[in-house]
Image 1 (cartoon, chains in turn red, cyan):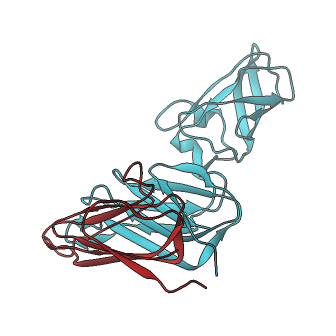
Image 2 (cartoon, rainbow over the protein chains, first blue to last red; image 1 turned 90 degrees about the vertical axis):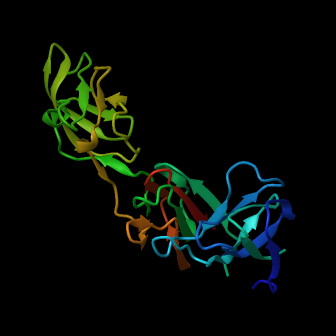
Length: 101
Length: 193
């Protein structure tokens, strides 16, 4: 079993948002404007470099409306060896990471 | 309770992208072009493709999607040739030592790829330099997918940008994880332990 999760809220790109050996259980994306796409890319690195190890995007719901809320669960958490760095796109997008250490 | 997950990012077809005894907990797909579908298929095998058994030189005549072959030299009828993917060719006819007719008598697991020549690994005789270059008409998928994910439609004429499937409990791949991914600029993520 795992400890209770902690949460990290972020609104901009962040290097080393969480330290090495973090376990991420869930990624949530809130799209600030549903007229355009939003996304989060999560890197296992001290900076936002290289390829992400996880990403999430808001999907188009109707012809011109995107999802307000998107999430991706890791029922066994995703292990970050080097640290968690975040790349978030989209107008007024907000991200949440739920994690344990 | 399983160990924490690792991530494998993929953008192209791959044989044995993960080794045997991997447990896949989740697969995610990012569609690079939402005007069309994208997909990812995971197969529990060391290779995506294998040669089609019992084909012969007429299936390797270079026409259409057929592959081709180079007859080499020094061969005799009934020689067997083991190719670099482990497949075995039986020589049915020769002309001045060059193979002119043959049959694919067994298929290997080395993961042949279209338009890439298979070379001789060994032979029962003395011949050398026979090569077999499969075309798409000479290849078949080795096994059916164990996991398959598509982008799917999210709005009229538009496909989903992001899709995922969670496997709980995870799917155990006993032999390896080989995958094919389709779609313009599609990116897949395999989360495994």
